Length: 222
Length: 222
Image (tube, rainbow over all chains, first blue to last red; front, side):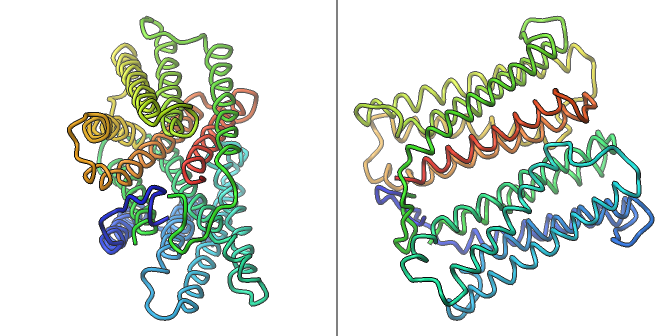
């Protein structure tokens, strides 16, 4: 997708976009950790404290389907070495993304079970969240079969490649969409309006959106 | 953006994506209107009823920065005739998108004023919403100056074109992100969990996301 159909070009390399992506990744992680560790007592998957379980959902989902998935997408431009090496790094980052996403799901299901709260899977956040994770797993197996498994034919790979990239970016953007709905739910649930914690949450959302934008730009730029 | 850098092609035309986009547009509009007209007493910009003011925000924002903006993006493929005609239709749809978006803002500011509710502009929804509208206006004037105003030089247009398309798609996707956060806020505010109204809201969100996906796909496909 480096050129538009009519030959117009972006007269810029991908490097600044990658640098911006890493800056926004660090920003999002820092803001999230301050919010969770300083204001809400940390996070744990094995806690009897429901707040810490909920926080584990936030932290794992930020790192998994967003930060590491973004790193996986950028790996073809950030990792030095042969194409084969880049593909394996891309695969490993995605595996980590799925694994942390699964832990994030586990955390929120445990939260619902322990808190005895409202029935789960009723909000748009949960719907798109489950959708993202389902598509991510499917995409991973398709990608593995077509691009890493030695059996796939060369012309089949060429046919699949733009669709693999399109579906991958779609999953990534849908994960960011889902994080936005999640952050808003947290904002309303904690009844924040002003103050440092409200600003932390909102700026986490903005950092995630700008991270996503930078990652997509790094794919498009040569 | 019709081809990937390495020459891989999507072996599919844009037509099915455009058809899907129009189906999801009709679905989103229908679900939203049922939700607002049947369950919540309609919408009006000039109402003393704060609920109807709030509903006007929902309806105008769906039609403006989402539906008409999507139509504007697709206009280069849906409108028959010369390129000049398509450009003018693209511009007019965007003008309508901005105009309805401005009415949507007016509705929500009136709602806050009349309801005497929490101070406005404190949530991530409001931040990205104001960001979308600001960028949209800037993008409109840049687009008008470079692509419709006769003075702009040919090579300047060629340089600007991919960036215009990228920024335009970014604004459109950010509008969809913002609609997701807005729908979740409504879901929580109305304390929905199950039932028809909850399903209506969630399916509106899903229809909007699929509309966005189809519009982006229609741009990428030849």
